[in-house]
Length: 94
Image (cartoon, rainbow, N blue to C red; front, side):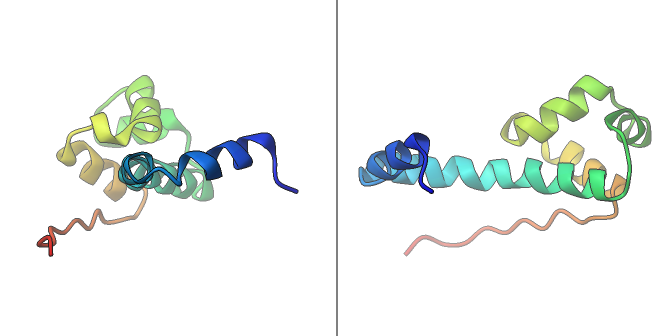
């Protein structure tokens, strides 16, 4: 069943500028979601990850919620702490 949010988002995504911005943000958010899912899958708390990467639990929380505001080294340390590798690539525009 489609919610009112789904319908609203669908309408908004018809606008090319909104669609582009949404997809750019979605890519960044997926990093945080993937890190949080793997942390939970491994039964780790944010405090445990923070100890492993030399950070604080609030910073780990921010990294999961707003990875676009986290530096690449921190993302790499977090990924390593939960048994993942951060794989980034640059692709030429066509």
